[in-house]
Image (cartoon, rainbow, N blue to C red; front, side):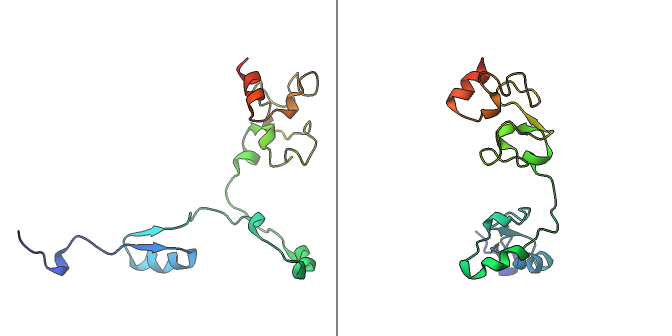
Amino acid sequence: MEKLEEDDTPLRGIFCLKTRQDMKRFEETEDCFILDFDPFDSFDVKKLTFTDDHHEGDKDLAIIHETGQVACRDYPHPRHLCLNFPFGSTPNPSHCDLCYCYVCDKPAPCAEWTISTSHCNAYDSTSWNLSRKK
């Protein structure tokens, strides 16, 4: 078995990057690297935490730009997943133009939206899934 010289080896070092800041530098110099994060993830303001010390500063936070589309806001979605009218914190009969009934898969409001079984209250659960199958 012939020993390969160090320069002839097909194996190269692989780097694992933890932050976006590292990515730019390594893109310019390395052929291959592993990302320990999703580079397409957008910034999520819900992950921010504020302490009581900075409570007054909360008013200064504003989202000025966002990229890409959000499935449960920009495409048809079941009412319980609507981002325009969050389920449970807004009245369930409210809906946007892209909401559809989870039970009958028709645009909201369906014929049963607020009467009898109130499809506006449907979400992914055992009982509602049985109604969907019927």
